[in-house]
Figure 1 (cartoon, rainbow, N blue to C red):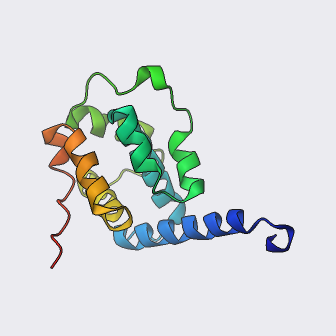
Figure 2: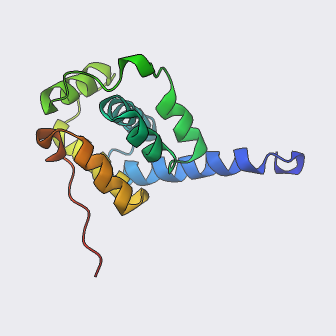
Figure 3: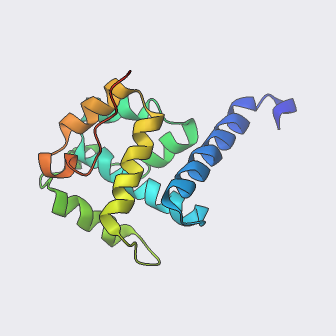
Length: 147
């Protein structure tokens, strides 16, 4: 494809695979499809919990392909969701995750949050975390301080 001027598409596909591979390793699942599914659901749930400006700033740092996944089925008039508790967030993930039960459930979500902290600018992660309710924020490890 790159001979046809589609290098940007090739690059975002490759970068998305790198992200999914890394997340799959962190989760220890050895199932990239399942890891992708969890990443997609968590990103879309975060999207709906964040104020519009913060949601867009967060997405700007994703590979283009994942940015499309993030915005898939987005309904701006319905965001941010009204009931924004940890329990509501976890229920959404549980409801949308198809397949095997995730165990331990909260640990898998925390792993996704920690993974995002490694991929996204620390200032943006701080803004996203601050936009979340305190009980949900507790699942997202605070980024390590620079040495």
